[in-house]
Amino acid sequence: MSRRWKITVEFDGRPFLGWQRQDHGPSVQACLEEAVHRFAQERVTVHAAGRTDSGVHATAMVASFDLEKDVGAEKVRDALNYHLKPNPVAVLRAEAMEGDFHARFSCIGRSYLYRIVNRRAPLALDAGRAWLVSHPLDADAMHAAAQRLVGQHDFTSFRASLCQAASPVKTLAELSVGRVGEEVRIVARARSFLHHQVRNMVGTLKMVGEGRWTADDVSSALAARNRSAAGQTAPADGLYFTHAFYPGERFDDPVT
Amino acid sequence: MSRRWKITVEFDGRPFLGWQRQDHGPSVQACLEEAVHRFAQERVTVHAAGRTDSGVHATAMVASFDLEKDVGAEKVRDALNYHLKPNPVAVLRAEAMEGDFHARFSCIGRSYLYRIVNRRAPLALDAGRAWLVSHPLDADAMHAAAQRLVGQHDFTSFRASLCQAASPVKTLAELSVGRVGEEVRIVARARSFLHHQVRNMVGTLKMVGEGRWTADDVSSALAARNRSAAGQTAPADGLYFTHAFYPGERFDDPVT
Image (cartoon, rainbow over all chains, first blue to last red; front, side, top):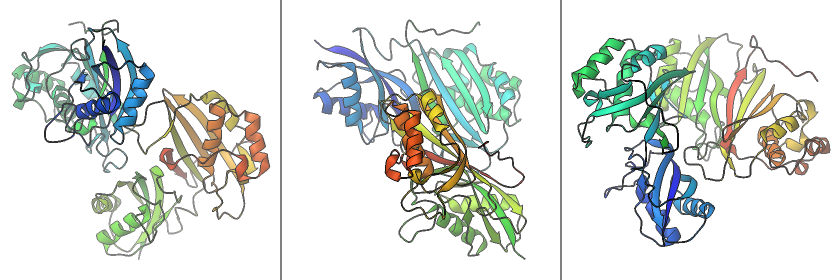
């Protein structure tokens, strides 16, 4: 009798082509599936709450898989971590779940953090881990403009051309911008996102922070339903998957 | 007529043998001196407030050097950063100073931050950038014990055997320990430190955090004036040089 496992995973996205297994290079999924095989001699598919792009990081990605091997949660965590070395992927927690739990399909919400370092000097400590923006950013103006995107909208203007979602309509529960010293942090939360949606929203808010766009320009970009009407795609470096919400966890939708 | 420059430098210590120029491998000093040469065709010596060890990082090391070339501060910063690529060293600021300013000899205080990540799972995002301690640490007990080391003492028990300081007597102005989530952060501030003093104090406080030592044991270790009486040397990974104080900046000594 197999058991379903939920794992919470931290990873540095730099060496990977992204979460999803690829034929032509390393992926977080392949690392985890290989670690499961080395530990339990079982070939499994590890499903994630979010299929992050190349270079995107995670502080707490959630994934699930089935295991025949009968072991405890601490053993699963420690054995996977042992076999994951030297990849920059770490299993923070492992939990045995009911058989109907699925990291992707059971997920009712996702949170991302986007980090901008706002200064002239290049990044030494945060190279590959944040977006360097040298023009001074007005975080308050960015936050105010971000509220134009909160709620249920057709996000076609913020959707990658490769996006496979059936509908461009999504409900953005939160888009907050705040400054901590030289860092501008953006938190995005929704049931689900379109491909590149967070990075395209960040690239658009940067225009506002630089004073080149107003909040009304953001509303116009949204209304245009045209990718070329919004800002650039912010680099993967600054993006972190930070939380997956499941039933029983509080996930407030915005008042729309 | 040459001008004296003060620069504030961020670096990731992982690829370096430390601050100081070495014959057998890369150093932060050599990177900076080479960047100055490429930019100004001048061979200079770059002096630092602190000569950090191999693997130790800096968020704001201060260094000084003389330049014949007549240029402005922004040009010095930007040109050095251009020539520092791809090394993980960044000049945050450059300031023209009076000729008697010396990053090391004018410095009246230094601050370090030590980062411990306190959890079972390995470090993915913070590999090489923090000390992983898996046994739960009591940060409050560490902070209380740390106060036994504040003030003027003979720090022989916390001094590396290679230390070249004339005297083992130093005045520790601050040694604070606090927890932020799974991270335990230690701030150390003094006019100057002995070789490995911060890392040896951190290794000793870890014993307290784990419940293996009491604050009285820390006092006894200090009184023993014997390196073997104190705890292990914490790894370089978690140590960051964070501030150099100069005349005109407030640097409070403790009441001793």
